[in-house]
Structure formats: structure tokens, C-alpha cells
Image 1 (cartoon, rainbow, N blue to C red):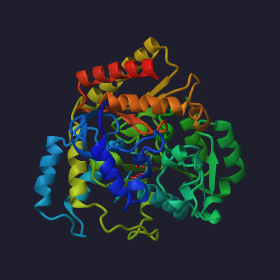
Image 2 (image 1 turned 60 degrees about the horizontal axis):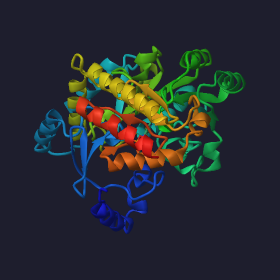
Image 3 (image 1 turned 135 degrees about the horizontal axis):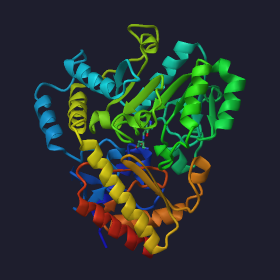
Image 4 (image 1 turned 90 degrees about the vertical axis):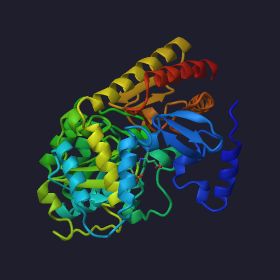
Length: 428
Ligand code: KE4
């Protein structure tokens, strides 16, 4: 049995000064039980906890570390950049460079604004859509998580789903009333709502693949219907690709499914592990953003030179021919191995993958929205999670989160993960 004594000591210290001992709820292991691991360092596919235990890591900081942890190119560039100072509060060419890389990969966007988190990106995109249309309401889908801006904590996924708190206290009713929440993949409900309410709807925001209830794929025709209905009624279609961006494919879910949203939110991978979010879209919308236009949005550290450096190096490496394909092939190998291990172990699981992100549900039902994801046996998931941790594999500490692959995971790492999964599934 692995010992986690140092993590436990560090957790108790943290509990005295930080709410729940963590700076983001899902890290607290509340959904899987036990105390969270305190991580000391990471390299390639591995993370190392305070007790010196090593783990093959599929959380990868919730998506960003697609090249693996501490990639030499990213680390070297950051070391050089830090000697030039850490923040100027003035424009730098680095911001233009990352913006150009992003626009090249996401041709649906004419312009993009850098912010510091996915939350800021979606919050700003929604304000812009409201400013552009003059309408107040928004549509989101059950289980989708777009960060913790007030109007979005209405049946949010991710942490809120894990905690089963569909609406967070502190969100004024006046905010929540402008947010319409529909079931994902339900074209009929979407059509019905837009037919009735389109005059007051500014935007529809969606995760095109829902990573915040695990990994839920759009059914054939759903995203097309979304695009058609929003175009027809002058509603801004926002793809929240904070997680799916550079993950479902290099060009995100919009490239994979061939849909051109009006606006896109990005984050995670484009920061290479440093705090970056971004929102962008068609020029007629983006020209309304301050200081060019009247819709205000700002940020002290937006476009921070260190964050831009990490993002530029990460996207540059990822854009090299064949690199994304390599990571996707590793994801396919993991999928094959885990599905086969579940069969051999006689376990009732469903595995879903979109590019380099994936999820194993402990249910034998098809998972295509929030309600069906919730049929998963979270007790079984928790037992599986703990078993895998004991065997040195770090999965997301919640059934309702996605797993991620990196360029650094070797065939051996994947084989070991599959063997661990078979043993864990036999045992629980
Ligand atoms: P941040 O504010 O956490 O950078 O991004 C919010 C966000 C927005 N949109 C999508 C699709 C997201 O997945 C996220 C954040 N994802 C979670 C993981 N499910 C971050 C992990 C956490 O909350 O600690």
C-alpha cells in the first residue's frame, strides 16, 4: 500500500488557511473520498506527490499539458523569458504571435482577445453577445460547465455536478432567470425554446463535446441544428472550446464536426500550463470590444508575457506535422486497451473518446446527456479511482470529468495503465 502521510500533513496545514484546503473544489477529492495528493513536481507523463510516489497522469492539469509536463522547449523558453521581467502592463509582440497562431488554427475567428482564465473568456463572450444583439437571455445545456460566472452556475457541470449543487448560493435570481438550461443533444427542446423565445435570446453557449460531465459526444445533427437555428434567428452561437480546443482535434470540435460558430472561447492548452483564456469571433462582433467598441472587458495580466511564451511554445510544438496525430493514436490505443480490459473483467462500463480526451462511465446505458451520465455508479467509479491511484495511475477525481492524453505518454505507460485497470476492475 502506498503511503500518503506527507500529503495528509500538507492537506491539514492547507485546511487551516484555504477553504477546503484547495484553490479549486474538484481537487479536494470530495467526489472520490480520501485526502487529495499534494504534488511536488511533474515531468513528461508523470507527476510525483509529496511522499515521492509517482503516477502516470491523465489529468494533465485538466487538459493544458498536452505535450506532457515540463516539456524542455516550453521550460527553456520560460527560463529565458523570466529574465526579461514578468509583466509590463503594456502590449508585447508575444500577444500578437499567440493571437496569430490561434486564428490560424481557428479560421472561424477573425480576432481574439486574451484573458486569464476560461471563466473570463466565457463571461466576456456572453457580455459581448448581449451587447451585439441587444438581447438578455442565454441558452446553455445541462451539465455543461463554462466557468463560475454568476449567470452560468445554473445546472453547471464539473464541480457543481460533482457536488450535486445545480445552482450555487450567491447567484441572484435576477441572473439565473436570464439563463435557459436545456438537455444536451435535444433538438426538439432547442427548436421549441428558440421558436418561442428567440427575440430575447442573445446567444447559445455550448461545449461542443461535453467534457464537464465526463465525455459526452454530440449526436449526429445536433450541432448542425444548433448552427441552423441560431443563424436563422440572429442568435450568437458560442462554442466553449476551453477544454475541447486543441484536444478534440488541432482545430477543436469545430474542425472535427465542421461547424463555424460565431464566437469561440479557448483556454487550457493555449496557456501551456500558465493562466490563459481567450475569446474571439467574427470581426463584426469583435469590433464591439473596448477600446474599439463599447463593450467593456479588461485584465491586468491579460496577455502576460510568460503565459504567452508558454502558449506559443506549446502550440508551435503541437502544430508540427504528425504531432497531434501521434497523441490521438495513443488515445486510441488506451481506448482499445481499457475497453478490452473491462470486457475481460466482466465490468459494466461505457467508454467515450473525442480526439485526445475521454471518459469511462460505470453504466451499461448509452451516455448522451447529463441525465444519462448520472446513471453512472459513482461508488464504483470512486473504488476504481482509488485502486488506480494505488497502482500509480492518476485519473480525474470525479466521474464527471474527462481524462486527457499527452505526447509524452509511452506505449509502456499505456500498457501499464491497461493492466492496472484490469486488476482494479476485477477487484471492485
Ligand atoms: P477556468 O476558469 O477554470 O480556467 O475555465 C473554466 C472552464 C470553462 N469552460 C470549460 C469547457 C471548462 O472545462 C472550464 C474549466 N474546466 C474545469 C475542469 N472540468 C477546470 C478544473 C477546475 O475547475 O479546477
